[in-house]
Image 1 (tube, rainbow, N blue to C red):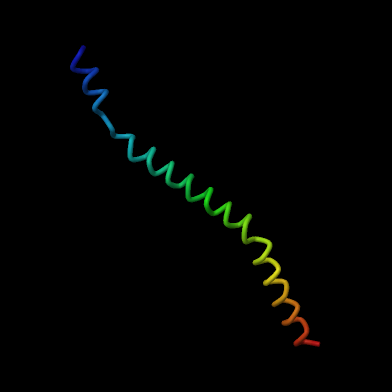
Image 2: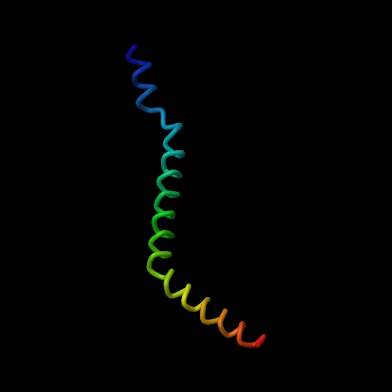
Length: 58
């Protein structure tokens, strides 16, 4: 019984998966923060350029 407990405690097969899930979560949070911080500025630039392109056609 003690051998099985020791094997279970030393088993780290799922540890890599958990690390990748945490990494993906952190990257997602950084991306969301970036969109919140720069989203309005980027949208304004796109709208400005769209207005300039629209004026060319008139």
